[in-house]
Length: 126
Image 1: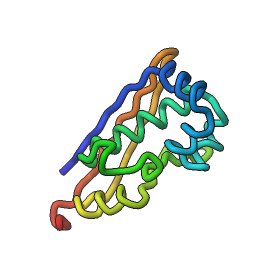
Image 2: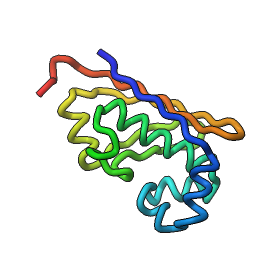
Image 3: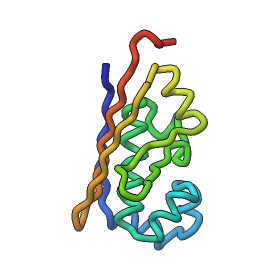
Image 4: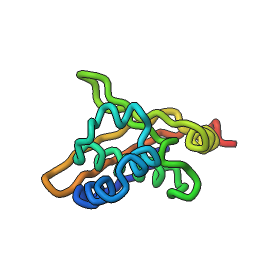
């Protein structure tokens, strides 16, 4: 079985948030690793914001059930992006029987989009 989530974000909206709230916004939403990777580049931050929302949709929690920093996009050189789950996000995924998470990120000049697919092992449902 599969569960999916997709999210699209206006890059300018993330730029506005960074401009208005600065480090407070960055620390609330992004892990230290995500901040280091993005180095303040707004399209990269926007793609990660979309990724977090897409993962939350696939988990069926929305932003109420899972914290922003509990969904982390990890990027290793020469590899596609990967998702690491922490805290409530990993509890939720384990409870659903999620065995694999695949994510794809993209952005144009104005928009960033993320698509996530999770495979669920139906035998491990709790």
